[in-house]
Image (cartoon, rainbow, N blue to C red):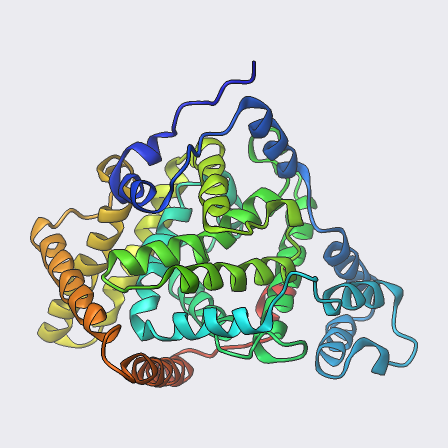
Length: 405
């Protein structure tokens, strides 16, 4: 008899335990056979994207990337005699799966937009910080040797990409979110190729670089963890909205090259996949601590160069972000990552969440309030992108990553 395995530590501590009790009706635990099948994907990569990257290496410098951008903009068959690798890649991605429902994509995007800039808090404090617990997935970041210097840049690039793919209408073929998803897929393939060329890559300990398990895990951090995290901060979604947000991310995952077997179709599917990840991937190490420290320091950087006021801003920023991380990840994981423990700040976060919940409850009963909140949320997001553009040199084509490979 293939018995179900016990819950991983993450499911017995912190906010995850509460979430599973609230949102999951059935037993999530996997069997040994399911775990073995899941682990097979740790040796699987992305053949179509990897073939495109191999093509780039054979072509003159930057020529392959220019072809890719032209195909994104005008379609692969607009190119004169396009390489077969590009044809196969784009013909596959443009053949939208039967299960994709444009109306659901739009509904899910509007629910995400409604969270405004508040939706960015789960992105850094829950998704990125929680992802550092998966130490095998962090090895590509460690291998670059730029953990500390690039922490803020990674956070900003991730936020900009997230805003791209969650804008209503942006995932239609050729649009901004669609293009951003495919560009990041190519970035993954470039980094994977670079790691595979390294003589020091430990396949026995770390599996294949940026493999299917790790990419699926990243997708869950943006989808399930976002839905759960914003609810923890007081945002309210209907059951339909939660399902549609996950539907949106299922399609994003497909564009990123994730095997359909690893793309959750329902919220319960997502929690089952998260259980498998928590069981097999959440194995933190010293590199996890380094990444967590770098992320915390990027939050503190908000006050640099502002004197006494800046010191206060830095303290508040670190306290707020760290408190959210601790509430979600639980004491054991937060202590291991050496996340600051400010009990007063955690109380303030919970009080703010209660206030948000009250306001959200009222919104659901006031005619026009939801549409107004969507409008304000979209405005907040546009202003945030404008600020990012003024402070950071954002490159939507990710040329820096292409050169690194």
